[in-house]
Image 1: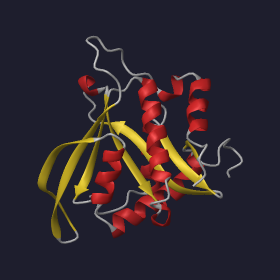
Image 2 (image 1 turned 90 degrees about the horizontal axis):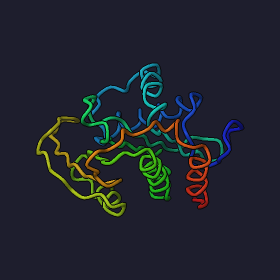
Image 3 (image 1 turned 30 degrees about the horizontal axis):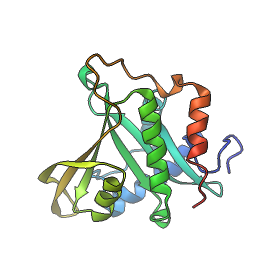
Length: 201
């Protein structure tokens, strides 16, 4: 458990976590087609992305026995104003921690925080076929939207991607802009984090 965090499980990423976050993502860049990146962004580029995202959107890590074992975050679908109620989600777990419940805990906490912010639509883009990821998202309520055949090329082959969607809040006629996660009431945020840290993997 990190001494600067009140929770040993799910919590907001700290700058000191980013080296471990980078290592997890580096594994997927080099050993999988879960991401279409050919080269892992530098630690400085990752830090710059975190600095840009985390004041407004949740950027969460899972910690176990003092180590970051996974992370999940939301990022804008588009910079255009009409998309401000729409986000894309990303999640990566250290390989040895897959299938142990961490993915669900991270995602459910992320989704609850986004709902509290007033975000309406969440999308994920998954390399297809990936039945484990697709079933995981389906169990959380995501529905398939579209399949893009041969959308990317990596590791010597053309790869399909599938898009899935989850409605987080109703679609009002005059929606209020989402608020920053940092502007949510502290008691609400602590309550959500506590709820998702009640289960020990």
